[in-house]
Length: 195
Image (cartoon, rainbow, N blue to C red; front, side, top):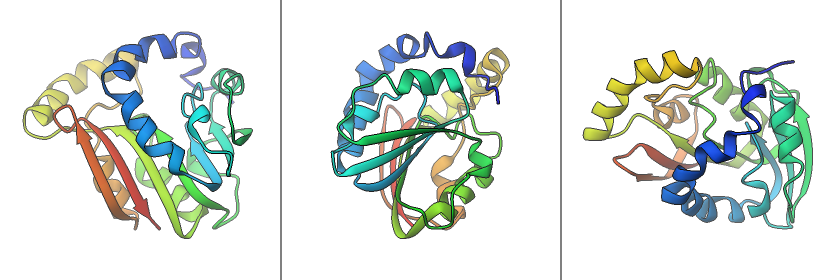
């Protein structure tokens, strides 16, 4: 299985460094240390969230890219971590297998976000937590910027959508959003919901 992210694995963290410093690092530190139990992190990428999970978590780190997973497994972690290479549209897990599903900067690049989030809903137990850190279509000026830049950005990278409304899709598949925190004109959002 190959992924468009295979070739990006070695430089991915460096490319995201300015956003990490500006906003993402603080958002990650508020979200992921609170996640416990059997956890599925979708689109784990280079594993930047893995050091944040508590020792009370067991994390299945899922990504379609083998090079990204190899980098992720090099990260120090307090939680037990196991890697699985799979497509988010067809998760290889039974219904209700996880206490929590997490992800960061994932659903901008998923071919069918509705189907992907539907799979997430399926593998999460009733009452289970969803924790996503995403970039989305902003609000006000942020919406105008993401809409204007989106065609150029997508033409350049071929996979990442700047103006997805992941917060809306989360609700549409059946999650109850309990928290929606937004930063930088509403472009970066921390979404916490319950199945």
